Amino acid sequence: MSQRDLVAELRAAHVEAPPEVRERVRLIAAGAPTPRRRVTWRRALVVVVPIAAAIAATIVYTRPSHDTSVVERAIAHQPGTVRASIPAAPSGDSAAKAFALPSPTNRVQKYEATLSLRVEHARDVSDGVKRALRITTSFGGYSSAVHAETHGGRATADLTLRIPRARIQAAMAKLAQLGTITDENVSTVDQTALLNTTDREIARLQKQLAALRAQPTSPDNDRRITALVTRIERLQRGEATTRRNAHYATVSLHLETPPATVVQQHTHGPLHGVGVALKWLGIGAVYALAIGAPVAVLLLLLWLGVRIVRRRRENALLEI
Amino acid sequence: MTFQQAAEAHLDDVYGYLAWFTSDRFAAEDLTAVTFERALRLWHRFDPDRGSVRTWLCQVARTVALDHFRSERRRVRREELAAPPEAIDFRFAEGLSPDLESALARLTPGEREVVALRVLLDLDAGTAARVLGISSTNCTTRLNRALKKLEEALHVAA
Image (cartoon, rainbow over all chains, first blue to last red; front, side, top):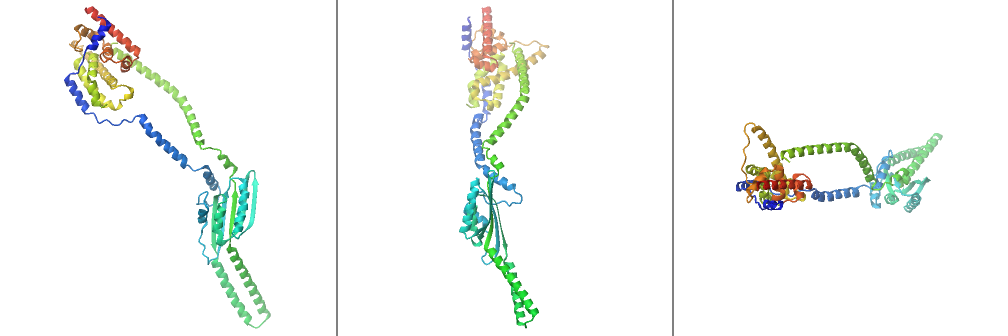
């Protein structure tokens, strides 16, 4: 019999499992659970990749811009400054609300405000000074001091403005639009009680003066009348000065360009973090390779050894 | 494909492979049941992308058979001191000549295994090699050696 005939006869043979084995297997298979949807790595990727992309997009788009963080750092590093609770670039209305303080018309109050603004370029500081003076004049105020300087690409300007108290809120809203607010401070001191005390003092002195004038003339009486008149006049001048000062609010306006060191940080693009992460990943990979490669080689040799031994035992078992 | 369908479709193949491999009908029946029990436990690990159900079931059956051979060898070593093992009268398949049955019985388990996979189950060299855990060339060499041995045995018998 040739090898071909031999194979043909072997192929023609039919092996069928006995009915009892078939029944046993059928019983085993009946216990199989309902097939579940298999989670393969491809299916997992289909779910994981869009989720990861969505998370990354959320992080990128909700991340605060460099400008805002620079402003926050600049504010944080200024000792004694009061952090503004309004956004870095408020609109005119929101700035007006931020500066709004109760101002009853029948009371005399001393109003002082400090406003620090950041502008992008040195020429913006110069323009800002001009516009601030125009705003002040348009509201019926005046500037009591102006100081501006430029040094090595960085410019600053300090203005002391006197603006009518009644129109201060509108003026502050206009001034706030000259740049990005980095610091603000508003304080009011009520001076009505002080004026009332002065009024009472003047009334008391005038009563004394009237009593003295009713008495017969004498050198001593004339000297006392003169002293009282001088004192009353001084009090009245002081009262007038207080009322005049209260009519105007004092605004200290500070304009500046960003510090040079902070500007350098703007050179970091949005992918700077990725670069740093990749750099550290590279360092980690080199270390892992240096330590892991010998271990991997050792494990590979061990695996090969185990495989060879197992194969030999198997061959011996099957008499190959 | 569900496990029930796989078991129904490939029961004869698994039984035939184990019967030829062990040349023991009773052992093959038990091992077939054990194979499907183990396959049921491992069914969640079966990946259709890596091979057919029949190949996977044959791999499970082979592991079960090797365990059987190991335990059998230990048992024989213990018992043959007391009494020599009895020869089992076994028919490999319906339709085979007595000479061929006798020649098959004289093959080693390893040789019968490769004949069962390549001839009885008609697996290609690559698939059979994957079941055996060897290369395709090695698998073909083993088959040729087994067939030559069968041929010689039949020639002597004639």
